[in-house]
Amino acid sequence: MSQVTIRDVAKRADVSIATVSRVLNNSSAVRPTTRESVMRAIRELDYRPNLTARMLSLGCSLSIGIILPFLTLPSFIERLRGIQLVLADSEYEMLLVSAESPERVDGCIENLLLRQVDGAIIISMRPADEHVPLFRQGGTPTVLIDAEHPQLDSVLVDDIDGGLKATNHLIELGHRHIAFLSDYLASPFNFASMQRRFDGYRKALAGAGIAFRADYHVQGNLGGREAYQKAISLLELADRPTAIFSASDTHAVGVLKAAHDLGIRVPEELSVVGYDDIRDAEYLHLTTVRQHLFESGVEGANLLLSGLGEPNRQPVDVRLPVTLVERGTTAPRSI
Image 1 (cartoon, rainbow, N blue to C red):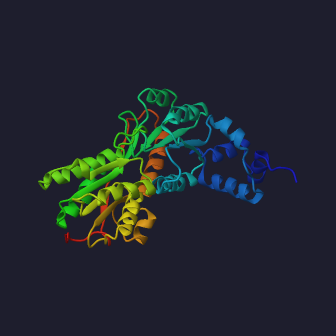
Image 2: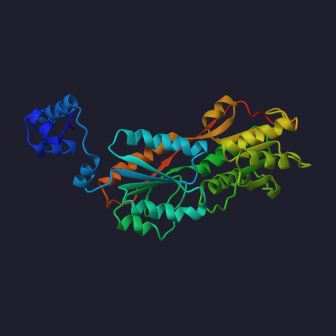
Image 3: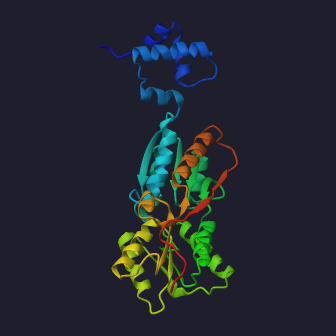
């Protein structure tokens, strides 16, 4: 069977080839009745436009580049789900690039620009200042999620408030020996969220007249296993904390396992608060700070699509709130 062409669609709909092209390009210069006639012909003939020809006619790649540091962490997966939901209803495809190491970030950005993507979304990493003009001069709208730059659109969660909410919750339960477990605050990926959560933690302590203790802040390259080891070191202190605020739910899982292995009851002897509210948090009955990960992906993708039509607009800054979700890992101080 011969391949259906745009000429066949035009003949079936009794319109010109130019009119079919305008319908495919979503032009507003087509009457609704004509558009419906063309779309009906497309469905009846099962017409599939030639993507290469379409890209050439539109002068674009019909692709959106997504750069993120890791593919495996739940928080990044949730943000990607939000982005994918929005792009699935558009004509754009996702071109996903995982940096995996700080040394690869520059190459990832340059690779996307060479591929002439129509737009870019960068998750949790602040691009170097020298890269920002490349995006702007190349006419590549760019949105940062969980990062910010004054010259680019951004979607940020209020992590300082999240740190405040988590720590104040523990203070209100009577805890004064409160530890904070996090990734390195100074990140080679230019992460800022850990520092902001730490700032909220310090602010809450100061507001309650509780002195900050350096030995109660443990940081490192923390996955679940590493968080477990760091939590052991905290819980084996002579003056161990009665509460731990973990800067992610992944960290909190390590803390819960450490407490279990040391025979420390949660929440009777140790209160634990996480951050993110990933899917496993509810299963573990983990008290946590819910940042709207999926929604931040949706917001970022929508912001980018709107920016494709307004390349010279001023940068837009979207701030999303956080919510404390109380479950079963926190309780009034008992020791």
